[in-house]
Image (cartoon, rainbow, N blue to C red):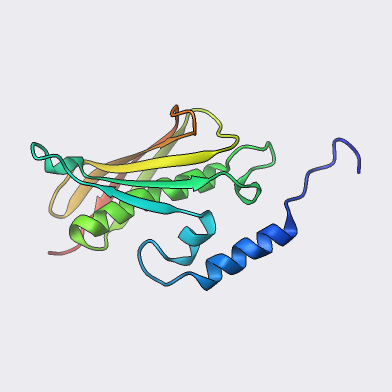
Length: 156
């Protein structure tokens, strides 16, 4: 194989990961197929007593070859998806299923390897619309991407 030839992912590993995601998924929050494919783990941090809008949905996932772009870094689409999921799962936890109305992502630095962390939180919570953000950091704790979004809240 020539040195400049593109590296292929481990096909057996990819198949095994796909089968594991397929076998362990349910069409529900935290366990839906795409979340399983990304390898997401979820944690919810409670609001502090002084500010109910400080509740956080933290998710982590490993950078794998299946999620890399041709330059070898974590694909921006995987980053954006994880950030959207961190916000959506928090909306669901506090109010029920909502919907992303719009989302803007700013990519600051590549993530090449390790475990990525996303933290979704409300910046302004309303009854029918909420404003949110998600911060994605690499294993070094440095901010790699920031998403801001408007969410349609469920009817109460």
